[in-house]
Length: 257
Ligand code: ADP
Image (cartoon, rainbow, N blue to C red; front, side, top):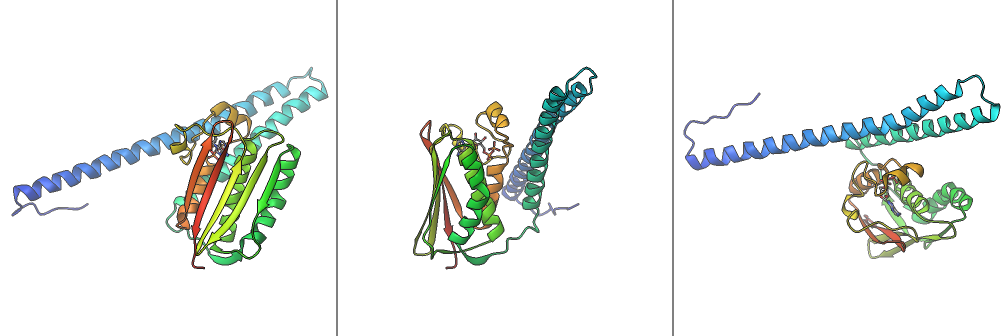
């Protein structure tokens, strides 16, 4: 509850007050709409895998099925359950990032050390799909960042580079430093992002090609998490892309180094 003393106010002051109240009310309505849209998206994203799980579980219960057929259904059920787990993990991650108590624990570390760990995690997936990953990073570049969050940002971008490019292509990660500015660029030779979609890719649940992204296991939350983590470091991220040629994400990190 709050009250405002209206006596002794001039017409101008009352006008300004009315305008401020109108602006606040518009902002509240906007937030309400955003929250409702977000809830609707979550419900939809949770319901889709659940529908598959329920449907396939019903079919798998039928008596006359062979073991192989039953196995096929169980594989789909497991895949859909994995998607649900990813979705819930990412939603929890976003909720944590939205929370004001979220802090990042920055420290100095060598970018090359972190990239070695990252490539160990992601390389098998690249190899399995006959895709190449090239990392160019001078050994002596140190960065002031949260090491766990840094890994999360790069892994997310590399996973996208892998997902949205085809067999035989190469993804290049290049690190350079000029004065106190560190540039990290991740360039793939994949399908690219249409110009019209670029302004929205960091929004929650935004996907360029919904059905294909679902096939590839996307949630549409990865880049919104990346953006939150970039903001938390006070860094910048830029995207440039050309259809069927590839996409480059560039992080510009300015640290206390
Ligand atoms: P998703 O889980 O669907 O990958 P993201 O938030 O990570 O969600 O990305 C949002 C959308 O941006 C993706 O669905 C995809 O359409 C597009 N996108 C992201 N990275 C790339 C890339 N490297 N190449 C082409 N499209 C991309």
